[in-house]
Length: 398
Image (tube, rainbow, N blue to C red; front, side):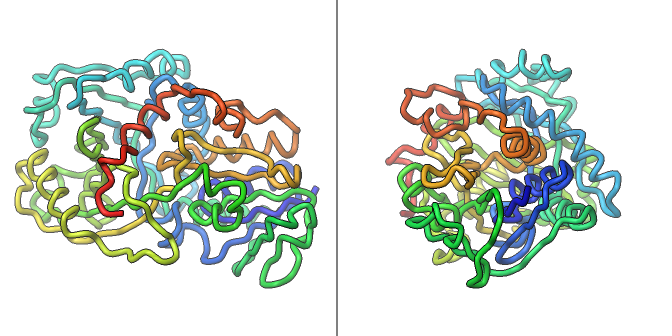
């Protein structure tokens, strides 16, 4: 079987790797290369964690990915995964996103534990817990070095005999039943199966399928320049990754000092629409000041610390926050991977193996990811989270 995978972000790279490993003849295509700066899989780092509300399929996919990440990191010249743990700071009234995860996390052999604010202050004296209502600690969690991960997976894919091509892929969705509708640098890509995994460019390639059920949101990322005399207090050896669950304000999250870049902080808001080709990737001053205010409040010892680096990236969101895995209605040999919704990187290896099972072993697409679900009144944890963040009144700069 010959398979063409379009897109070498984390989903495309992992799908290509697992399909190739299973014996398929795989060609992987990308415009700019794995983990490039414009990609949804680009940038320095991502959090990996098992907590996923009541949506156990994500907990299971993430758990299935840990072994892959650990082996990839061990085999790499540079560290790709740091198991520093995850701290959940609940500043809203509802902590169910964490508590509903407990049985699912325990079912895969791990745990998330509530710790008192007093205990939290002892463990992490550099964090201000004053306005936090509940604190939870997840041990099997940490940070992935994102761009490095993508590059290493593609390197392994090529080493195992996979073929990688850099250049422009076009799809004529109107004629998708015809093989000649998918081209690379103007020439037909001939394959038995196709996987389209182009992140924020999916809806450009497949507008009829995706434009009304996905949207792209702008996300800003900041690195605060931790000085040498504080680096040992705010790094991955002494502090876990963290996320502040907050329904009324942006849910800020962060990764302590890493890769000599700084202390990373970003937010989950999904409210400002973004064009990955035309929108400027320049931080908005109001958002910079909002982030500084939060950062100095939560980490008082770092009050006044300057921002050393910024990045503007994007989420490719589905309307309900859940992934989209579906064959295109015009061609059941074209499998589309879309709607990563800001939480797809960590479980890329597990999802790639699922894609291999769907294509190679003809396994059924899980109902959680099938487009048919959008006809139902979905009340999953991801739906709840995406709706909180996608209120009209919360759009800031459209």
